[in-house]
Length: 130
Image 1 (tube, rainbow, N blue to C red):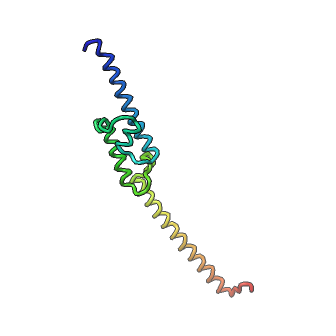
Image 2: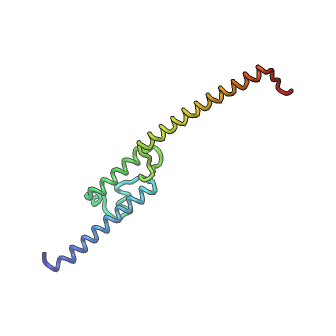
Image 3: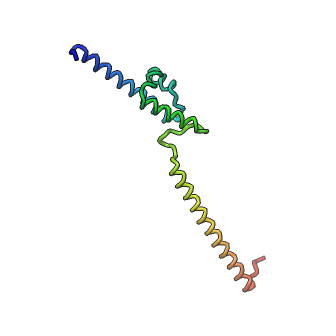
């Protein structure tokens, strides 16, 4: 490699890395804000072309994943870091079922205690104050 092209190549690499950083930052900002992530929006925010975004497989994949996630969401999208996983939802459902079983058992226990107390009052002929 001739010595006179080395600075040009180094500058091109720096420009490429800066462009990638701007695109990734734009994606993060959209995701954190919970707004829809699209190639056009990321390109505009990062000041890059959509064709360049498509030519970067990792960045394009990230945009597509986030775009699909926000498309499927019927409500305003939630940033990826705050989204609930399927496993978490199942654990919460199991905890809710357990709490429901406990509450029903407590209700039944209290009903039995109340019935017993009322039965004892009848046996001794308790009359409530009038």
